[in-house]
Image (cartoon, rainbow, N blue to C red):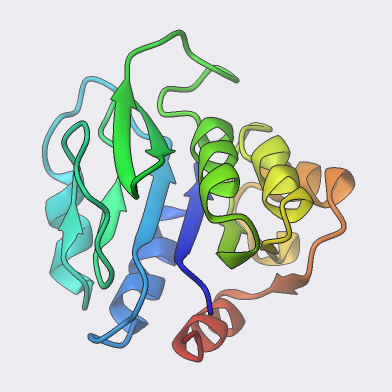
Length: 185
């Protein structure tokens, strides 16, 4: 039924992402696209840190890399990550958006345009508004919009802005996000 999951997060989201990735069934049928704000000058260690706990291979994709199910694709530091026709990833060093590169909004918007109603979009803890407009676009294209419960977030700005902008399908604590994804087919 679904074709992809996209998750955006910033400040306070690393532990949540780690818990989600460690709880995924090893035969998860979809690709997981991760757009996380991180320090642009730190080029190594992030993928390795996520990979230690993840049941899925965590990959920093190359430009034009084919998106495959059962893998987690992490937007590389200081690159925007887009989804293109043909189920491919495109990377760009265009201007920052919402003070960020990678921009969660750009990743979500392009994924929404490609996967439409077959996309699950999830916004986690974060310190700026990046991702709120992108989640709206996921919903506008018929996809499922999920926001981490702001009461659980270390930093609520991203989730609260998303809730103001979009009538989401679910507001979930981390455990509920995990349970939801474990049922995805």
